[in-house]
Amino acid sequence: MRINKWLSAMGICSRREADRLIAEGKIKINGKLASLGQEISGEEEIELDGKHISGEGEKREKPKEVLLAYYKPRGVICTTGEKDRGKNVIEDIQYPERIYPIGRLDKDSEGLLLLTNQGELVNQINKSRSEKEKEYIVTVEEDITKHFLREMSEGVYLKELERTTKPCIVFQEENIPVTQRKRQFHIILTEGLNRQIRRMCATLGYTVKRLKRVRIMNLTVDGLKPGEYREIRKEELGLK
Image 1 (cartoon, rainbow, N blue to C red):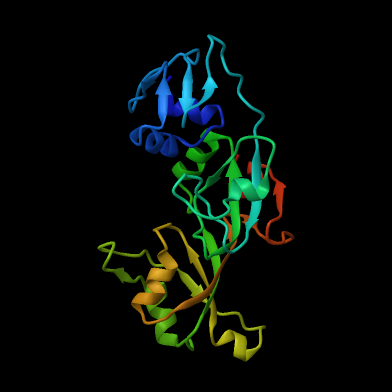
Image 2: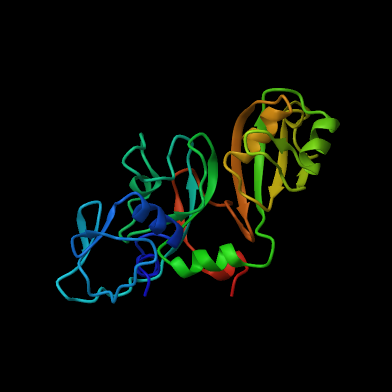
């Protein structure tokens, strides 16, 4: 089995994260730096950041499968690398099993985040042929115009990424106070570029004041307060 697949199956991290850790020289196999795509049996002595996660000829048992829906508060970081500053999601949740986030929300954003130790579930979500919708409520500092909503929905060219975002659904709620509605909108994306919504708004001359993710696929953040989480089944996401 390839080392990234083993790390994923054992609930250490996703395959993508495993490849990143290997490239950064943070994974060792039998005392030597791991290489991308390296094959292992699972009985090797494996280290992550100098800590033993497998060894002494014993096969590590696959952990209990975990999938959590978590309301990430503002100020909490999704990544867990040593260069990050501030509290990260793992420290905030303090879950008894090793878990890691599926996707990201930047430090200044809040809302629904999924965490798991099921690498194959991450792959299933990423490879799903269905549109993986993510819905956000965005509050900006400037008054919203119909022109702004139309440009957001049709796609915005992001110079720094050298690409145009996919067309998406953008709308305003009707049953909220006018003073609130004039600076708040919903956006439903099917892609996840780095700081995409903030970049889109900035390109059109708007500044994001608050960004909250309220839905991932079929799952909403309803019932959760900032910092709270609950265990869920993948069927709640619309997956079999």
